[in-house]
Image (cartoon, rainbow, N blue to C red):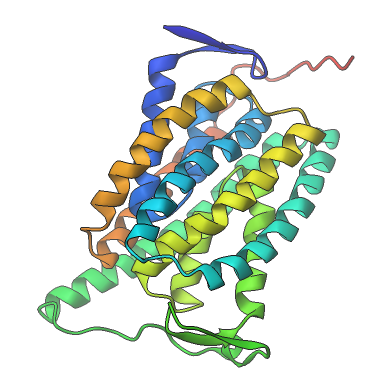
Length: 305
């Protein structure tokens, strides 16, 4: 059954869209990411224009994240104090990011910037997470699963001022660090159409030193409001949000996120990092190959009224 997407100006099988939404929602619940880093490339693969995919996917991220946050909140795995500080930075960053998106779109370079951003950031983060996950798994096997490494290492940024005690995460660090991380993730959310979880989750684990179980729910909490801000600004400034596409993806995402949360609660943190890293690298590889292959249509025509 085909459904016409008015903003994307293409017809797509509705079953395919529901399956994509459900699959990404499932991954969102398991790994604590909004799923945009997978959904946006998938939408581009089926023919949705990158600008529309970015703006619409931000709306879908909200649905998956809300569903996941409630599930993690019931388990007590959300640090709301950390989430609010990350949110302040993310809100400012996403507002600036949408302005940058509008500027690049006016220059006609937004599609290239989106694809290059995914290749660079997905490739770097994915490889680091995959290597770290492999090391942790092998370390656990050699020690028989009894040993436990340090929660985090102290670096120069742990000496920053304005320290706050995060009792839920058992941390005493500067508020400037999560604020800066939130800001950076907010900018990427606007440009790449992601919740930012694929960068936020590793940063919260390796830079902030939060427990893996607490990271997932807290990251989803921040992602909800940042993605909502991006969706509103993209619709108001660029008119690139396809409501029909967003609603179809939303149905699948909500159902998938609930199932994914239950699966993720039973998996070890080391395996979560390894599997997420492998998926990120695979998506990055496909995008990189698409940049090297000569497109079927070398030119595109846009009519402005």
